[in-house]
Image (cartoon, rainbow, N blue to C red):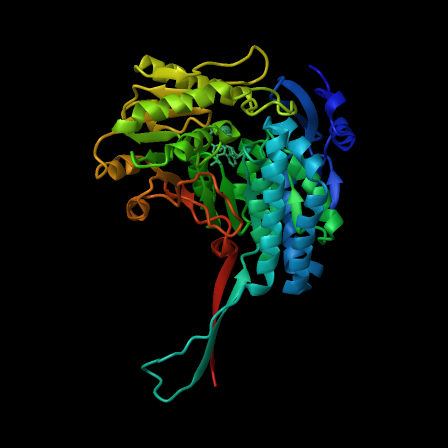
Length: 501
Ligand code: NAI
Ligand code: MG
């Protein structure tokens, strides 16, 4: 096993971060795991070890929850004004901006995504999210409510609601957007005054750990944010089941999401979930194909298809089907697949060997059921976890590749003849995270958007994210919403106060 992959090309701050075994953040201190164990994180473009990280498990989660509890119940965070909280969160966003390149390197190395993308999208979106949430800290308001109590005639009341932080929050995040997922989770929890134990994904713990250093630099009091890297079955499971955690927020697979719900029953902690998807992308024959074709390609190939909202089921109206799928296949064949740090790279490797095997397994399943590849269809290199951007045709609704989330650069394309029927087909899936609609007919666009059972519908665009736009799932794609002011509901609880005056 190698040490630091391609160290010659790496930003020196990143090289020194990788060269030292990374510790976990508990109660304002960087500490080793109680067990003393560490685990490796890999460079997915080579399969070589990138860095070693303290391996948290139940004992470390216990310490982190204790620190978060103390910080929530007493101490400076507890006493801070909303404005002071907001300023800290805003400052964290600004600090991230000052370290964009460094974070982009870490993200690219640990996850595999192109450096250029991490720099243009992941890091700035995370910084914006913090600033947006910083603004909310001073705007979390209750209501005054007129009462008309029938059994106390003539009595007067002053009644109002308080929206209070839910308390100690456990947050478990995935590897596809490691920094951005940390921001989506931390931003609203901090805006509302909660304290946090964050468990990053075992595949990609590095940017969250570096963010922990910026959290300290910004001036958050000790114990407000604790970061415990480790595996899902150990650290993650301990956090989800912990009796002193008031709420758990999870992003990841639907399968593990269900496990989280079970684990939460011990103390009936509140749960929010952002899970998988198999999002339909519908191109009508009257669409502007010059934008729909590259748009549909990017809907699936962005982040190597490792997006919960990837436009992975493509439905194209029959008269334009051949032109569209050929266009997307052409687009797929031109995508430069390579290591994230190579400036020519447009698509990096999948995150892990496990994901490589999972995606290749789906490809085999598709071929064995009669699907045909117009582009791609295979592993792309001997070394690293690369898969070719793939367009599958001759697919039908019963196939696994059409029903299940692949989470790789694989789109299944199917023609449709009846525009009335397409909504039914688009909705015929256990997931309901996102959908795309491409048409020049504005009435059709908005009528279809209303009928689609998904938390996000994009019209003549795809993968457009903003800190102000709520994101989350219908059906088995999850509970609750991320971002926007809606996410604040995940981290607050309402107290009704009623005074006789
Ligand atoms: P996963 O759901 O196992 O992992 C996500 C997070 O949950 C990680 O931090 C992991 O350590 C943690 N975790 C795993 N088991 C846990 C448990 N029993 N208790 C508490 N936490 C646990 O996802 P994985 O295995 O990395 O990917 C499998 C599939 O999940 C992918 O192929 C994709 O279909 C889906 N996925 C969806 C994501 C999304 O954004 N909605 C993100 C990542 C994966
Ligand atoms: Mg897993």
